[in-house]
Length: 273
Length: 288
Image (cartoon, rainbow over all chains, first blue to last red; front, side, top):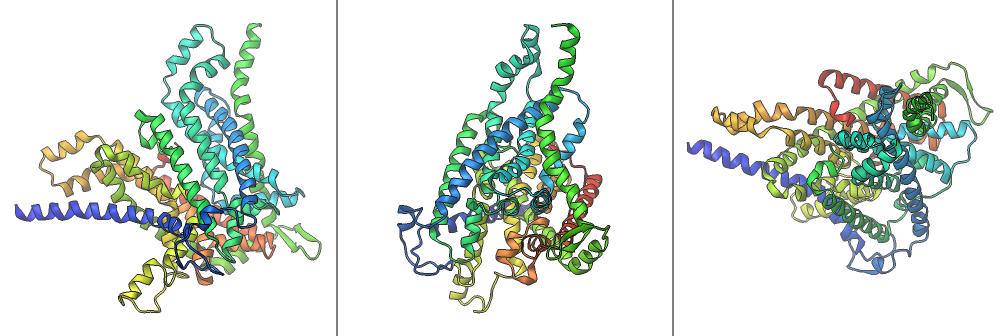
C-alpha cells in the first residue's frame, strides 16, 4: 500500500520533471537570443556577455547589409507564399474532390518533396541551373521556394478539406450553382482559416530558408544568407534583435490564428493533424 | 452549352487544377533529380572543358570509399538525435495530453518554439549557450564542478543536441496527436480491471501511441541525416556530416559529379530507410 503510493508519487513527479526539462530545453535558445539582443558589444563579438545595452534595439539597421537582406527576404517570402498558396490549394482541392489519372503519383511526389533533405534539393536545383546556363538570383529563389512550399500548403489544405462537410457543396450544386461559384461562395470561406495558416507557414518557410537558398541565390544575399556571412566574422547583437522581433511577430500570428480557429484545437491550428 | 461540352469540361477540371503544381514539381523537382543522376555519371573537370557524360560509375565507388565513414557518422548522429527527441518529447507530449487539462493549448506553445526562431539564429544561440565560458559550462566551471578544460562545442554532443532541438516539434506533434486520439474509456476500462498506472501505460497507452512515435521519428531522422549547418557551426572537422561533403563539393571545390553521386547515395539510402520503416510500421500519419 505505502509502497505503491511512494511509487505513484515518484512516477508522477518524474513525469513532471521530464516534461519540465524538455520545456526548458525548448526555451533555452530563445532566452539566449533575447539576452544577447541587449548585449553591449566591444570590438569583436564572441558570444560573451559584456554589459546591458539597448543600443542594438534603438538602431537595429546599423549593421550594413542587414536591411538589404530583409528587403530581399520579405518581398520574396510574400510573392512565394502567394504563388504557393494558390497553386497548392488548387491541387489540394482537385485531389480531394475529383478522381483523375496520376492522383496517387502526385501524392507520392508531394511527400517526396517534403521528405527529401534540403541539401539534395538545393544541389539538384543548382545542377539544373548550371546545366541550363540560367543566371541565379531572385527568380531562381522564387522558383525554389515555391517548389518546396507547394507540398506544405497542399497537405495542410487537404487535411482541412477532408473534414469539410461535402453535403454543403451538394446542396449548392442542387440549387444550380456552378463549380466555381460553389468553391468561391461555400468551400473557400469555410476552409479560409486553414488556407491562411498554410500561407503563413509558407511565408515562414521561405523567409527562414537557408540551405536551398544558399545553392540557388547566385550573388543575391537574403536575410539568412546575410546572417550566415556575419556569423563567420562577428555577430552583431542586431541580428538577435531581428530574431527576437520575428519571434514576437510570428507568436502573435500564431496566437491570433489559434483564437480564430478555436474549437478545432491546437493540433489542427498547428497543422499537426 | 451542349451536354457533351459540359461533361468534357468537368473531366478536364481536375487536370487544370493540378496542372500548375504538377508542372512546377515536375520541372523543378523531378527533372533536377534526374539531372543529378546524369551528372553523377559524368567525368572531367571544370578547368579543362567541363564535365562529359561517360557512364562514369566510378563516381559512386569513389563516394563510398572516400565518404563511407561520413555516411555512417551522419546516420549515427541522426539516429542519436532522433532517440534523444523521442526520449525528451514523449514525456512532454504525454504530460500535455493527460495532465494539461484546460491549459493544453498554452502548454503546446513551447513545443512549436523551434519553428518560431530563425534557423540560423537558433543555431547561433546554441553556439553561445554551449560555448566554453557560456551560461552552462561557465557556471559549472565557476562552481568547480567540472574541469576547466571541459568543452561541448566542437564535439558530437553539441551537434546531436542542436539537431534534436531543430526537429523536436516534428517528433512531439505526431506523438501528441496519437496520444490525444486515444479513447479515454480504454484507460477507464484498464483501471476497472485493476491495472496499475504503469501497466496501463505499458499495455494500452504506449502501443496506441506508437504510430505517432514512428511518424515523429521519421520526420526527425530524415532532415537530421541531411543537415550540415549544425555540424558546420557547432562541430569540428571530425564531426562533419554527409551534407557538409555535398555542400563543400558543390560550392567550393566544384566537383559536381562526385557531389551528385554522394547526394544520390544519401537520397537512395534515406528512401530505403523510409520504405523499410513504413513496411514495418505503416506511415499513414505522414501523408496527412
